[in-house]
Image (cartoon, rainbow over all chains, first blue to last red; front, side, top):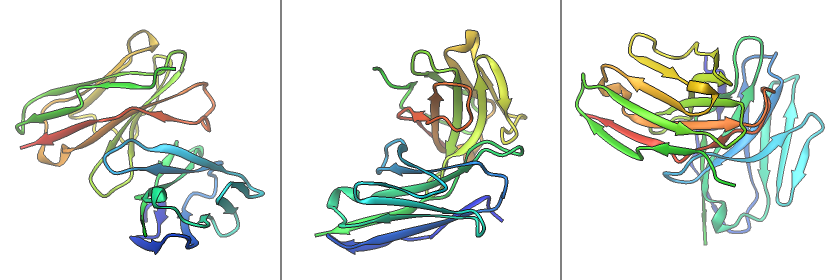
Amino acid sequence: RKEVEQDPGPFNVPEGATVAFNCTYSNSASQSFFWYRQDCRKEPKLLMSVYSSGNEDGRFTAQLNRASQYISLLIRDSKLSDSATYLCVAGPSENYDMRFGAGTRLTVKP
Amino acid sequence: EAGVAQSPRYKIIEKRQSVAFWCNPISGHATLYWYQQILGQGPKLLIQFQNNGVVDDSQLPKDRFSAERLKGVDSTLKIQPAKLEDSAVYLCASSLGTGKADTQYFGPGTRLTVL
């Protein structure tokens, strides 16, 4: 079983749509969680951290469910510029440092 | 503020050859990471340095991969000998402190093709 698993995607949505990504992690001792964004042939960049109480940054909302060991990312009012791959990251724990999921590809179409 | 620098940006070699990648982290960043990202997959941590000491190299294939961080600043990652399955983008990242939850800033990566 992979340490961090994400929706396989791809997600193809129209502009203005709301889209949600889920991610599960296997190590219950993981302490920190993040969503990174990676554009095609570019490096990953931090989108947002995920806090236990949930957090929002503009059109983006991240939530953490420790009991079920999953993280979610909600994007409202999708823009063309949101097209990218979204990487879920969990860690660290006493066993390992940050672990990335394989990513979910999002394409927003006009 | 300058970002993480990596070179070369692209490298094509034949299997069994050797190759080295260089990374210059953001000034003042104590922690440096090397990741391997195979097409269609997420980044896989190869090695993590804290200053010039190794913190985590559990996923580094030590029979062919080596890395060092001289003086706690620049770092090099070497593959010797390369295999076809080493074709990937090698990403270097750095973070400010020694806290494991620090934001990681990635360099542009080195795209390696092994023929």
